[in-house]
Length: 185
Image (cartoon, rainbow, N blue to C red; front, side, top):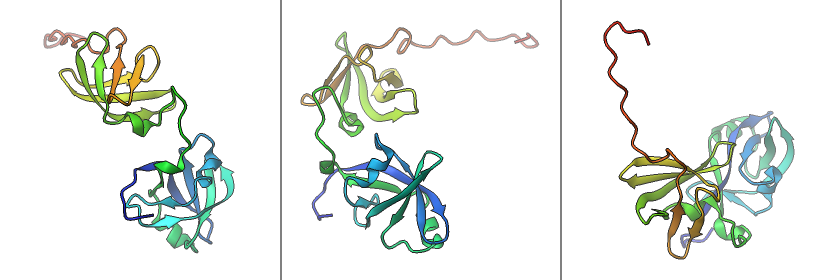
């Protein structure tokens, strides 16, 4: 990778070794798990150490692969937990209403009524759909479902997303009434 800074996108993580000859297990974050090898070399987070990936199989929702320079189980185990990155330029361009999660991080989160909820700190996907983690506003940290109903507008050029929060998402939480000592809960 060149000395100039280019944004790196995480496409997977090494979860451990497989066998004795340096094979690794990779949790792929790409739409097609085997697609992790289609973007060219992958890099460690520092952007300096790179590997060529040769897919050898799949098992239990993970990719099995060989990485150049990793020849034995000890070397493979030393990479456990390492995240694998590619330059953002290796990804295909997005369609009009498509976004890479990294495109959303740092955008201002404005409310449909004109107020500001904060900034997008992170985008999570725990399996039930993407969620924007918005921080820095008056209501603290808010997790907003990344749906067309909750986020009707993404304007990367203006550096903002518009949030139409579902009922109850940002209303202040009422403190529970104090329980009397001995009262059954």
